Image (cartoon, rainbow, N blue to C red; front, side, top):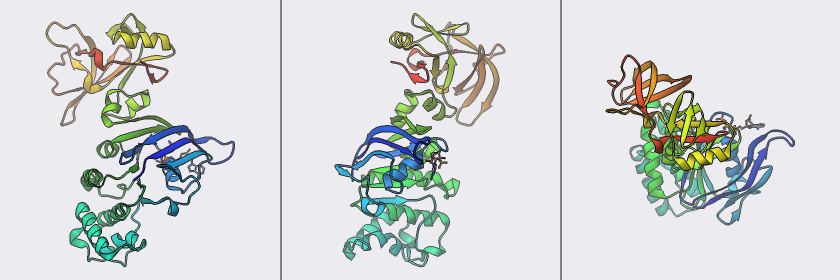
Length: 356
Ligand code: ATP
């Protein structure tokens, strides 16, 4: 397995045209599972195709470990790949499909037998190894495709392009967990494109959040939840996303309309220095109901939805729409909901970037 280094990498599909990828500099660790996450058109596939060698970057280099692979074809990069739709040989057995990448490299049959059985068992294909692939369900076919991508131990990385798109929705969660287990057991460097945050957050050690050709943040699911570095990351990750309210800063308080909300003094100072458009950001699940004689801030409640695991309150603080996630709705009265924005959970953003 290899570390992947993107060295001043950028891409324009046409000279002088728009940048599909803005210049970037990243090192992704050997053995890490990285999910490229972002809305349609943000550049995920372009970046994956540059790493696989299907697209040549217009600027910069791709390194696998110390090896500069920028000018190598996909075949010479030594990677496993899994595409959106199954790529398998219908007339071959499942075993032969899984063995194909190993036989192609003239591996010893004893090793092939062991390795194929190991991968098939991990993916739950051990009972169908002797069946022809064309008789299987779409889900099983995509598992074969995953297995073929994962079977070689000598690859630098395995790249996945939205591989669960064709999987039946109720089986997706199983396969997501399965991939997580496979990653833990095989210690592979994985790069996985998806526009589904649940998929990215379950599967990846690190999520690479992209928007308009830029990488906005590379972080653990926890870091993206607790400290989104950009308002888009806060908004895109979460269910619902982070609340943002335009504010000014006075002393160690964020002033939102008529409300004064205490924030971390160092963050308030950094926001004052940064200037620009300031916003207060706070996650719906990190706002809590006021208790006892706490005054808190009054949210006028527009709607309360029971979403099974939690109650979702949609309301207004002054002119700003605010979401709050509660365990139960009993704190809501005819005036609305009194809440506290805990200091540690209230973050300040200047021109969409986290300050401090
Ligand atoms: P999706 O989730 O819809 O696949 P994406 O995040 O993978 O989107 P890309 O497909 O990488 O995004 O596209 C990034 C930008 O590059 C878009 O503006 C797209 O229109 C443009 N683009 C992609 N492929 C080409 C191409 N072959 N020629 C010209 N422009 C392209």
